[in-house]
Structure formats: C-alpha cells, structure tokens
Amino acid sequence: MADTDADARYKVEEKSTVEAALFAASEPLTAGEIAERTGLDISIIRYAVKDLRMEYDMRDSAIVISAIDGKYRMQLRSEYQKYSGVFAVPEFPVGVMRTLSTIAYNQPVLQSQIVKVRGPRGYSDIATLVDAGYVYSKPKGQSYELTTTKKFSEDFGVGSTRPEDVKEWILKNSKGIVQRKSPAESPADVVEDNEETPSE
Image 1 (cartoon, helix red, strand yellow):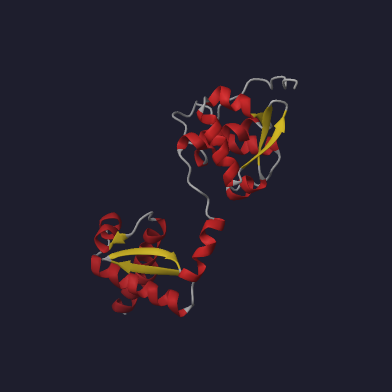
Image 2 (tube, rainbow, N blue to C red):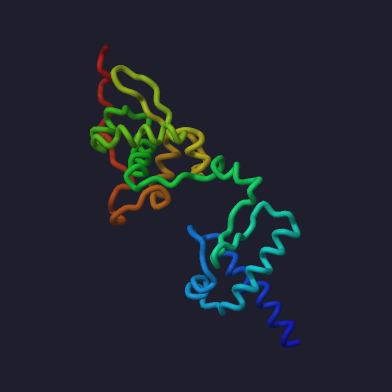
C-alpha cells in the first residue's frame, strides 16, 4: 500500500511540477536545473520527463518534450509550429509597451501628441505596434489618429474595444502591460487635452 501511495503522490505532484517547470521555462533546462529550482530528485525528474513524453505521444498531443544535449524543452510538434506565431503575444521592450499603454489610455490620440510625451522614439514604437496589429493609424490633418485594435483587446484579454473600457482595464491591470516604478506612478503617460488638428 505504501508503494501505491508513493506512486500516486508522484503522479499528481512530481510529474505536474516538472511539467509546470518545462511549460514556464523560456529556455531549455537540464534535469539538474529543474532539480535546483523545484527541489525534486534528478532521478524523479528524468522519470517524469520520460512519463510525460510517453503520455503526449499516446494521445497524439500537439506538444512534445525535446531532449537535446541533455536539455529538455516543451514545444509544439513540427507540424503545428506554423501556428505559434499566429497566437503568441509578442514580447516588446518596456519602452514600446509604455507607448502602447499611453496610446490605449488616451485614445483616440494624435501621433504628434504621443511623440510629444514619449519623445522621438515614439515614431519607431508606433511603427512597431502598427506592424504587430495592436494599433490602428489613420491620417488626420497633418498627423495621424491612433487607436488600439480588436487584436490588442483579444491578445491582452481586455474584453472590450471601447476606449473607456480599455482605459479602465489599464488602470486595473497595468502590471500586465507595463511595470510601474511605484504604485503611485501612472500606468501610462497622460496626454494633454486634444490639440487642435492643424489645417492643411
């Protein structure tokens, strides 16, 4: 009975812990690295990886655990890797995320206003965000009017595309889009009242 209980604990604890470690890792891990971070015995980790690989194979999972040069990595099977770029949320530098939050918080907002508060880097940040499909830009006067897109709301789990709802979401979930230096710091740069659009 003791062996059965131990085996059951392995099934629900050790294997799940190893699976979680591989899922969360941003780079391949050795059994030793997993052991160091989880406190599990290396032999148990290797057994768990073997068990997980068999489990994924038996149910034809889209996920596999590769083992190259003694390092393990959870990844999509080759035939499914074409979908990773379609659904993955890209990781942007903090500065780009700050520009994105500023646009989302103040939208609709002119590009000239974003550049005024974010500096010259605003131009390249906006281009990056437009290319990623998170910001929509349309000509307005001598500048461009910027708004966030449906893709932005879907990928970040906002739940709405209405500007007021997006603004409220940023206030509540600012850590998910840009880190604040202190709780009192605004999650986005606040743009002054909309400037008059220059006549052409």
